[in-house]
Image (cartoon, rainbow, N blue to C red; front, side, top):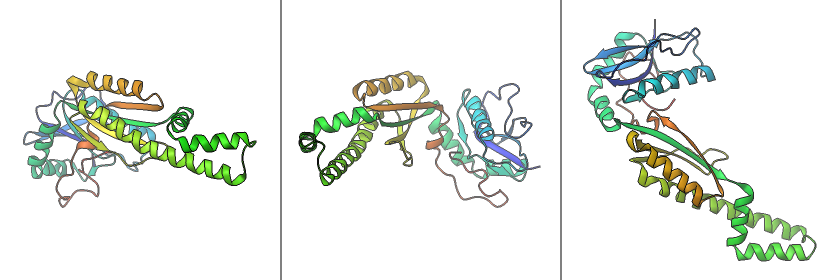
Length: 257
């Protein structure tokens, strides 16, 4: 049977929580495969696995529970090897890389920060900071709403100012939180979010990072700031060497799910 891989940890990891289960229906029993001072967190791979919500959550839950007791390098969802021997073979072949990353990420967790504007609040900021917009808005008001052309012009000016404010606030938020983190990874742009940034944080100083988030919220009340974490350090696991022969496509490849 194929082997599903959740992540890689040190062979000295305290071990798995009792009764932990992973992907599949019924959920598969999670186990450790050890090789040369490393261990892969695995289970039997179910047939027909699809990235459904239940399976994605099961994958993340295994990583979160294992990561609570020690550093784990997370694999992408759907990482499957032909069998247990293939997994231990990859552990042996990439041992140096995996040990380096485990050492670099030991005791650290990821917090993902997303932010967008509170619409009414940011419009107030734009009006307050831009005399040209204020003047046109007032002129339109005095003329009973303004001409079609002036309304279009005002809308375009406000949209451009809000866009500029998005970039400005994204940078300000990142700079406010960066001193409380060990590393920063800017995520892909996502519709509806002006900022999508992950921070690598020492587990022992997580409270300081969260305090910095609250301070940023106080200083920028026109932002809605959402925090997701602590998470395994998905965004800070550097890709390893090329796939060795015998592993499934996408298998044993560290990174986000």
